Image 1: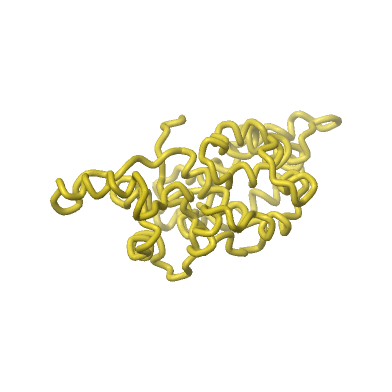
Image 2 (image 1 turned 90 degrees about the horizontal axis):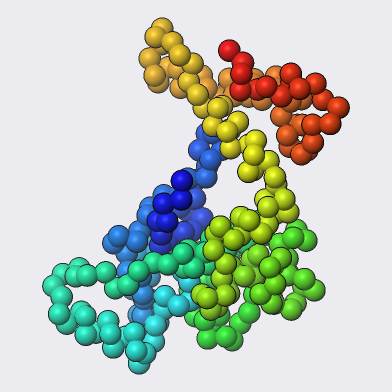
Length: 255
């Protein structure tokens, strides 16, 4: 179900993997963290978005404003009429989250290399630096920009699209999942894998043991099941069922 909820602070520290191999986003921040941040005062960034002290910045460039900008004047007018926290200073958009997610993916695909620190994000916003240093380190031909150095908005250049300076040039998450189905994202992500991974975390129906006791033995059972069913699983991962006994594919029907 697509509930269209913006996050506001997508970064590596907020992306978790559950025991059933599901990606879990934590620390939803759009309800209380500032949307827009002043370029000349990093204190809000440090307090709300850099609790790790790494100075790594995943925030979309349009969320930073100069002191002489129209947004700064609007913020000043609103602030003068508020007490305490006041009203929200804007709305997190999907394009903002797409930029942040692009930073996370680029970091993951470059073995943890930081995409932007705060000063680099400022420079990227102003156009004085580009994406070359990051994209040149991406190895997957479906991820790296065609030609290696020409950064266009071509549909196949996922990371460069997600990290576009202009938010209107960034694709939606639905567009990304649709456009790169079968290339960056394997077909089994959309068909087999989600339901099977979820089934690995189903606890056995028994009253002989308490919930925590049943949960404690789950990791071993998951590994045993994966080993026992690997021949059937591998068929789905290869994307073909040709020449395989269909009875082997009925993984979910085992009692």
